[in-house]
Length: 469
Ligand code: HEM
Image (cartoon, rainbow, N blue to C red; front, side, top):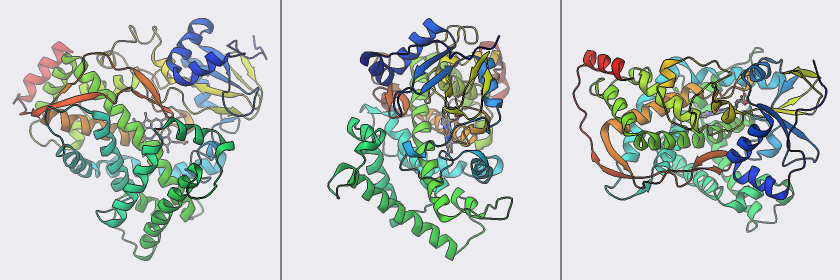
């Protein structure tokens, strides 16, 4: 039977509930799921009052959402809430224009092109870890953040060592460091506060920073137009060479907006996921031991693709992204024309959001979901509606393969050559950091020293993995 009523849910949230929804989203979602099940309605916190969002953690329902024609249900229109990315960003677009941008942006992130960044990523890891000092606690997230940030600047923007790279690095660091403050987060969320009252006002400073960054990006684009170099393999060059179905290239404004989008969507997500991976590997020594056995069996300087294919490393990355997916929810999709999902009739205007976190914590799919058990991914295959740290359908993360490649390379390179330990015994909590869920203290670790890989003949390793996994 189809009902035109919205699914049940907490309609009149008290101030305390709203605070919990913002500050402790995991507890809020879990409380709602216990009370209302795997589909419930909550009021949209920000934005026009009386708007509703339906949260779904039922694989069948998620499949229906991901498979619905974007003409009827789509994300996009988020540009207004993400002022820095710009109106031409793939995040802000929907319909045909979104499809066009996806077609232009997707190829550089796949296949041989992606593998070509392996050496560059390794050089960046080497540079960042060479700054480490032994026995001094530090948040591993600061290192993973430094690595993923440099990867974007060099592999995506294609910047080479020099003044422009240093200047963009400085300005962007200023921008993202400031974003950690509560005040800056509030400023970004409430459009009413976004007033440029000169260079010393908070919004004015932010706008000036943005203009300075844009100036450098447009200078880089202009230089590439003047001196085209077909041998370049960075993502900006590939985006500049791409043509749509009418043979048209991306405009300079589109290029700028996509570069900033890739930076925002790509670096904090990967850095945070990596910090969690280091945490779990060291929190559960048996996981680290199995992983090191697998890595050591590859011998010295394995090819990046060999690392990418390792089954246990793959399972560790998957389990890391399952237990605390950095994005709790996939992008909210707005109903454009009447739609039936899971027996409910949804009218235009309603937002539907697949809940990655609650789906990843379903007991029927993931027994003992609060336990970190990479093995579950070796025992069972999950459908894209049961496991979806990168979302799905027409909005699935275009950086998915790239992020997994980078995560595996960073973990494999650092774990096989350094001995690390957690600085604190107490468990690390997941807290909101901007739009993402991140480890509360960035995962404090200590460097014990360099590690010498143990020599293991590869066939005996395979046998031992087969018996122990
Ligand atoms: C571990 C790292 C990452 C995670 C967990 C992640 C997760 C996600 C999620 C959940 C979405 C929304 C999908 C949906 O609503 O269905 C998304 C979208 C997106 N991601 Fe990622 N992402 C990661 C890394 C990256 C990287 C490295 C890049 C590029 C450099 C990137 C670029 C994008 C873009 C452009 C979109 C928007 C796609 C669209 O609107 O069509 N992401 N990502």
